[in-house]
Length: 145
Image 1 (cartoon, rainbow, N blue to C red):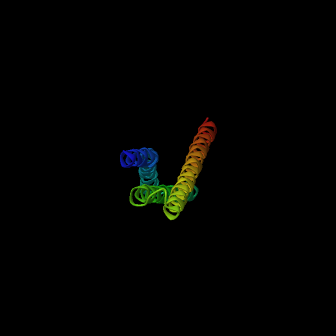
Image 2: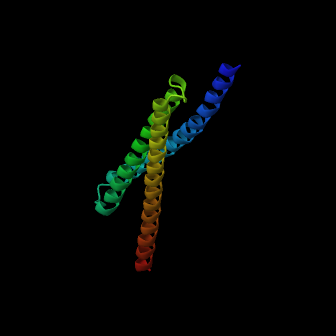
Image 3: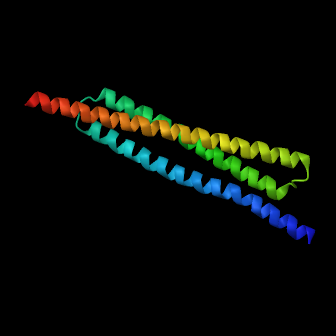
């Protein structure tokens, strides 16, 4: 019965990484969608032949920030999987396995925080760019009057 209880406890502990992996997967999905939108905008700006250096520089920065978010999220996912593997392979009664579990899961959480921070920064930058474009368009429309 003790073995069954121990196995049940390990499965319960393994559920936390699963929820984190699900969230990280969703974050990666959103990041790739936003990266696709950045690419579409670059295509639009470069297809008309006119120069848009400021907008293109901003889009280049957004794509780099999204790269950082993706790397952190992927690293967090890998570390989370490593933590879950440590749960199954090692025993929590073993001091080394418990220590490894804490480090792996802690590092995964730190990477998740980094990914979320980069994603938030990119979203703010995107909003600033959109507001700047709207403002420039309004000024141009005012000059035409």
